[in-house]
Image (cartoon, rainbow, N blue to C red; front, side):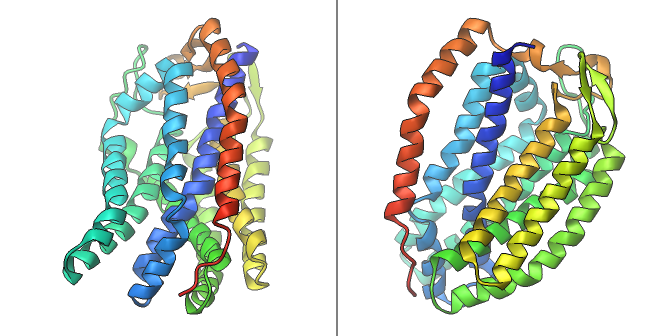
Length: 339
C-alpha cells in the first residue's frame, strides 16, 4: 500500500465526515418540521434556517462519490452495483427532498403546501435511515465473488445491525438538527428544540449500547488480526466507541446548560467519530466479503499512481477556495431566524 493510496482512503472518510456533519443537521431540521414545529410559521422558521445551506451541504456526498470513482474505481464498482437498490432509494429520497423546498413554496393550495411539507419531513427521515442501513450492512461482510460481484439477499442488507444502524443515524441527525435549531432560531421553537433534545439523548444512549453489542456480534471490528500485512488492534474500536459516547454526553450536557454552539459541534463531531469507527474497522480493506479471500483491499482497488498524484495536486489547489467559500457562507447567514 502506497502513501497516496492511504491518503485517498483517508480523504474519502473526511468527505463522508463532512457530509454527515453538515447535511446531518439539514436532515434533523427536516425531521423536526414533522414533529417539533407547531404551525406554518414555525415550519417556515425551521426551513429558513437551512435555506442557504442545504443544497451546498449535499455536494459533499457527490464529491465523496466522485472521489471514490476516480481514486478507487474497483471499490466504487463493487459498492454501487452491490448496493444498487439501496442507493437508488437514497437517490429518490434526495430528489424528492430537493424539489420539496421549491414545490412547497410554489404550491397553489394549502393542501399542496402541506403535502410538500410532509414530503420534506419524511424524506429527511428516510435518507439518513437508508444511509445508516447501507453503511452498517456494508461493514458486516457480503456474499461476494473474487471479481467483486456482490450477490447478497434481502437479509444480507436488512438485518438487526443494519436496521439499528439506520435508526441510529436518523436519530443522530435529528439530535444534530435540534442542536442546530437551538443555535439558529428564537422563540418557542428554540425552547422546544432544547426540551426534545434533552429527552432524546437518553434514547441515543440506549441505542449506542445496542449498536456496540451488535457490532461485536456481527463484525470483526473487535478482533485483533493481521490483514494484508497490517495488524489491526481491537483497542482502536473500543476507543472510538468511547469517543462517540463521550461526545454524546458532552452534547447532552451542553444542551442542558444552553451552551448551544458546544452542543452543535459535539453532535457534529459524533458523526465524524462514527465515520472514523467504520473506516478504521474496514481498513485495509474497502469491501468485506464473507470469504476473506475475496476481500477487496486498498492496494488492489485504486487507480494508477499517476491518477492519484494528479488528483492530489488538483485537490490541494482547489480545497482552500472551497473551504473559504463554505466558511464565508456560514458567516454571512450567521444571524438567528425570528418567528
